[in-house]
Image (tube, rainbow, N blue to C red; front, side, top):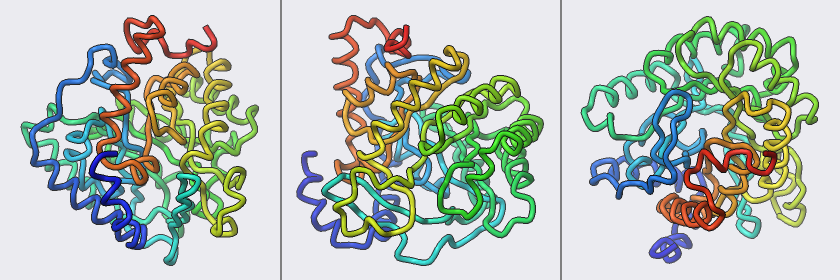
Length: 351
């Protein structure tokens, strides 16, 4: 953790959202710094039609409004996923709505898709894409959602896909946040089928992934995977936050509404990842997210079937340069296990 272990106590005296804004501002400044060292070649691969110099990404929810894309790349991430972005701006749920569970290295949040809206983010992304150094920056995914008060939530996803299709390296359809009432109902087969069809029609040439909840029955997750193959969706992100309180029962915040992220999600999300990989027989690109804080955990996600790995909560506890440490550890573990390239490790537990 280096210097961060001395800074974290002061940062944790601030409310979580204020500390988050300070981090975003710092990373905006970090975007002006020189690029980090070239990534180890063992970590490079082509996924979703793009060349990833490393598999580590910043999960959605961190850079909600596409403000710190360059900075996220500068601290070592190979890709970043901005959003969740809704067609219209919305404030989200009342504060306080984010709670640190320090002992468990976890968060509970009920933010509720707070963001400045797609038009603002579209402008920022357009400006960023016009800069020469964006060509060497991180791969950029755009996570799209529906407004809480929308009368046509499926239409909101269609709108987001059409808006960002030409600027995003990939799109993520977020139907698994627990903090917008009724949103997870869109994971039912009839609804998700319509979403997939309409989003694919709106963005025919852009890679599309669907983000699912770890609380789904495995049969339902496998059904969504089968539908993704049927409707030419490129992959799934496994997983969002959980409503389960397993592993955080002794926290003073256990009764707070919202989704749990961080270490308590690792086992359940990795188990689902492996089950979906087996069911899809490697036919989908899978991104593993949930509880990753070191190279060993990233390796476990990859061996379970993930081509790429995301994190967010771990950076709160370990600092902004965590990505660099994870990459070094992961490269060492890959070599120690006899893998010449990360591609060979994907799904190794089931091959």
